[in-house]
Image (cartoon, rainbow, N blue to C red):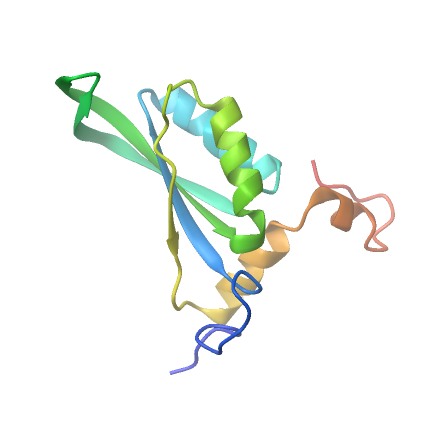
Length: 135
């Protein structure tokens, strides 16, 4: 079995890390907007939307039940702060769920693609690819 480059090799924390980041929202249109915005901002390489799911939680002293849509983002450790900042700004919940889980292993080609798609916009513009921009 081949491990992805950097996986389990003792690299510096965050130097080569991949994450899945989960959030939820109460409307499929909002889930779509959060997913699209994060990918457009290159804070995530992709996002998957699943739902509805039933969430049961305690909020302000009462047990609540709600239908929600989960959005699962694929990103890198280097872009986590940008993704979290985006979600906090774009989300309409007072306290949105934002949970990051490390990807321990994965396809080297897929993880390389995640890295390539989450390169910050300034890096993409300055990489010698004249006329191409990340939006």
